[in-house]
Amino acid sequence: MNRLIFFLLISLTTGSFAQKVSYSNQIINSTDANIIAIREQWKMYIKDCMMTYISKNDESLHKYWSNSDVETKYSTIAMYQFSDNVPAPFYGEMVTYDITKLDNDFYRLKTIIISSDSISKGVIANFTLFADISDNKVKFVSYLQNKESQLNSYTTKHIKYLYSDNFSFSRKEARRAEKLYIQLLSDFDIDGKNKLTYIVSNELDEANKLIGFDYSVRSSTLKDAGYYMQKSNIILSCQVAHLHELVHVVLQSKYPNAPRLFHEGIATYWGGTNEKEYKFHLKMLKEIVNNQENIDFSNFNEWEKIIDNKTNPFYTIGAIFIDYAYKLGGQEKVEVLLKSEDDINTTLQDELGINDIDGFIKNYLNNE
Image (cartoon, rainbow, N blue to C red; front, side, top):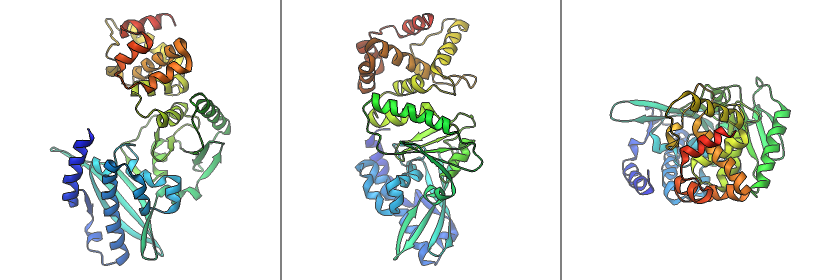
């Protein structure tokens, strides 16, 4: 959806804001001055989150958060857990159903996001954060900021790992992740001064809970699942060395507009996917060709699907183009792909000389 449509949506939403932000009757009817202050501050914060989508001035939101949350970027978790580009209020109604005093002037907030259409409603997230009141001022505190001191940690030069007692952490795997991270920073000439926060758990839902999300549509039951929140600079994963996501960490910041085919392709080329290296997925793609007659890879977007929990052909096709670019022109040619603003077919033709995509992929697989 383009920015003009979002601007119109903001105008409609902020004009009738009660439709976007709701509270339980207990919160609405509360006479507690602190709860009232938190309620109104939260409402203003959500409104400003929506407005900053247009202004792109995220710094204007810092005033709502603790200094620690601003410094760590944890302040962005609640609004951008399932999208780095669009704040949570655009996905549905924000319903805060609990504001409870925990200790002195420290309060807990629980909020759900309800998505609705003409047919049905559904909860897409349920999360917790906190509010601290000092000198009559409300400052929000992220769940992770409050939880972090209770977690175990291990730090490499560029990565800060956080994990619970029930997770079997491997320092060897952490060093493996750091090695790839350093190589990518060097190859792509990227400053890695901002330390990455890496939350690792036995299950992705457990990792989500460590950042305050008891439920989120951004979830998976796969043992190798993980995702990267660019605004917060946080990886959540079931693996200590989730190399695929680490590639995204390094390259998404430098090439935010690169086509998804190339982003997933280079992440698969360097870091594999589903715990298997690039060569494994080439073999899987070759088996698909051998087992299906009249197969056509020209419309590669149609191949973005996980097959038997083993492989995603879309990722592998992207990796093939990255591999060919390395062979054709090395690092420079790969960066040309990531920088290109043309459509993918034009880029493949102009930069790699590929006119027949289907034929190229099949020929590539035959030569492997």
